[in-house]
Length: 200
Image (cartoon, rainbow, N blue to C red):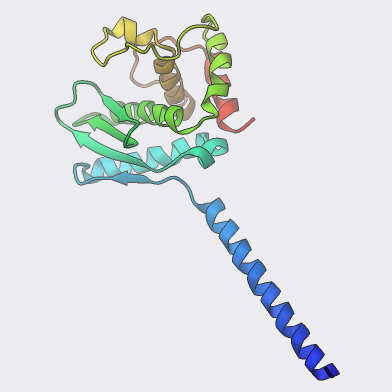
């Protein structure tokens, strides 16, 4: 092989390496830039779509350190829902009751998205002992009783750590809970979630 052939071969190899690394880098950029999506169905009106997307963006900002373990979440609206919101882990679908005030809808969305994280992120298990401690609950308190139903009285619902956590997420994202519930949340519990949410 002469020098001209060697130089041409080296140039081809160099271009190939640059292109290959560009593909890898652009692939990394795409996956790093990809974020979980909020997918709305036809039941969701325009006003709720705008509010939900804005609130979803706030939620993802607060949980930036955990976005990698979240999948897309679906949103439905219902006039017949018995509660302000519901989360179906099998389909990753949140349903909110409409109509509602901005405060009610935001609170419902954030509360149910908090449950989405519970079911989507295996690392959520690591948060629970610190959260229970911050809530001044015994370490062996069940996170969510196996026999808990949607028809629980408000006082029993409010005593479930999973529900207290979801209410604390509202406070973390919005700075307060605009819709008071019976679920007691300590400032320390909100701080525990904040540290975990940022990946600390």
